[in-house]
Length: 209
Image 1 (cartoon, rainbow, N blue to C red):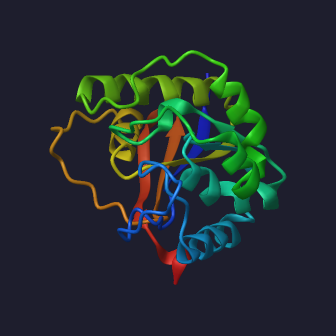
Image 2 (image 1 turned 120 degrees about the vertical axis):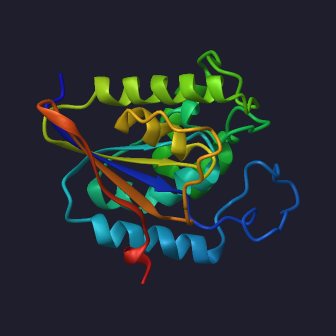
């Protein structure tokens, strides 16, 4: 059992979808990061480069993979892709691997493995019970690979991050509870076996200043 661990949840950086721009040939549910989003990802990496991050996780969507590409590069980690970290109501199960190879190469090998695996949960569903199951499954997979003292970065999406936070903090909040979740913001949770989880900070964007 994990006794102590740091979970660093990140919403992806600004995407073309966030600014209402649709790129030709790109699925509307899977936009790339804007130039500003790329800068945000670089600032995220610079801010957390001295934290001993032991693993980097991302959803199977391009903007999430792109967001943690810089921190994975700095820390020498491969990005571990989990389809279950996908945004709520996503119409596609994953990104085209060739796009990931081009824009977030450290996620490529993991995404190819994920693509070959069965879809456990319907990614297009916005049913809260399905999202709760996805969140539980995601965290069970992450914590199963987590060792005592690890610091893990997890990049996901604005509509889904609340489910992960609820699970980790053991909160029973109404579905309509509104989290403030800015692009490339960070939520940090400390886990300990002998006390309740601690939300150290929420929606932090100080690294973007």
